[in-house]
Amino acid sequence: MYPEELVKPMREDLTKIGFEELHTAAAVDAAIAKEGTTLVVVNSVCGCAAANARPGARISLQNTKHPDSLVTVFAGVDREATDKARAHMVPFPPSSPCMALFKNGELVHMLERHHIEGRPAEMIAENLKDAYNEHCS
Image (cartoon, rainbow, N blue to C red; front, side, top):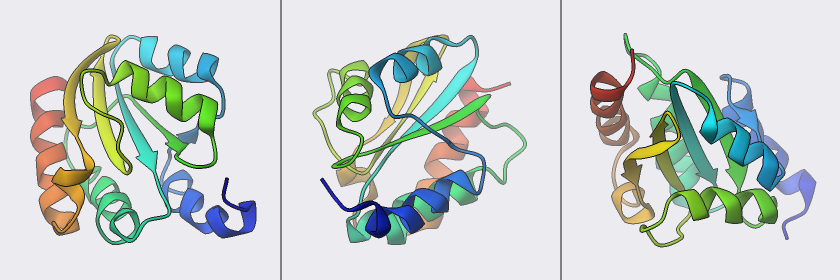
């Protein structure tokens, strides 16, 4: 587990743009079960989360279509919530950071760590925008 003072600014990268932090398995289940689309970001302390994932998520929201709900869990901090979010992402193996788009509770798009690491934030954002344009209203 990482100390809260270390992860606070990393959490705020997402919460200040409208992401809701989830800390329990029940909160994750409720968020994913909502009607409509939900983007789940598994946040992380790693460099690719700071340089690529969080900026990519932010840039992706500059789109005509976007998810109805934005939620995040923090790997290495919110263990129960992260484990539950990852359970909804099966058959994809656990990775962090990662991003998953759900529509009416079903996984419709997944970006694993290997899709994020080493790729510019703009490329990640374009991938997400394509998914929003296909699945979001």
